[in-house]
Image (cartoon, rainbow, N blue to C red; front, side, top):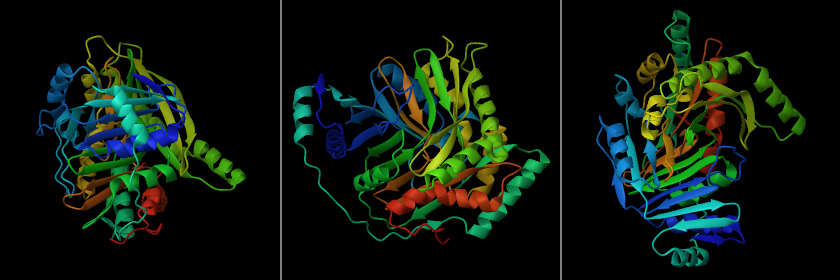
Length: 427
């Protein structure tokens, strides 16, 4: 049933606060960014009719079965370490979160918002709409003291980047994404408050708030991993980052410099080539093409270089197979893909888990849309463990000091939300 809204932003705030009272919720918000491939301004999946949380080894197969049994809306996430099912790889680094590699659920209630209308799919749609309109969120405006630590000191980080560059010189890889974890133990936070604060500070087109059984994903992602619209697949890898500046003229110069810096162009085009190759596993012959190369999108915190790669999906490839055929996303791995993932397992010091994975949905028409889980806080409330990663592309031309600064830039909004100084956390 469709209802008209008079104050969309207020309704979204109430709807999210109401949804967060349930054990399971997936809230996806475009933050009003213009997106030719976006289907909803906001999508909220609430409550659990059925769920899937399989053990490692057969996740994609079980997801395909779950999808066949639940052809309506399903929402969930894919962890980066599903790479071990796609290729002969392993994940042996430290894991403080203990999140599953995959979790999906068929919601009891689906709420979609587009412009000034909301559609509710549930048993008592009018009753739920009245609940949402009258819901009064409880407010919290304080952050407990949190001691953020990092897995690398600055010197250690720079030393590892130099080792990675040596692999590039030897020809082991061309480009890779080297990630590091920032974490806090004994962290006691209010996840919904943190999400609202992060989303206000850094609104992005693929932000999400995901909760299940006391675990939380608080995400301000600017990047689409993969979407399906009819028979078309769309991937929009981001590679290339530059800071924003309050001075308009300086900010414009920074943006132009991003577009013309050889290192940024190099890392972007190499990942575009990788994505093109990944899409061939699902594409009708001759349909893979780059719709846009080196596009620049400006967000509150950073400028990003975004390219768009598309193809026509083969009739014999299911939606779940299309996701599996491109997972993990090239922007978070490197090239060649398998070698890059093997090396990063060697040099990184923590399991990526949901970071570098994807959050999204499959809709009743068998379309889907998944983001890339970056700029994201992960929180296990039972173990009081809080984690976020930052990473960057390492190429032959990478300057270790600048890569270090780029990690800080990507972590800036999260550190600010947690009331941490914008300096490198101590190791």
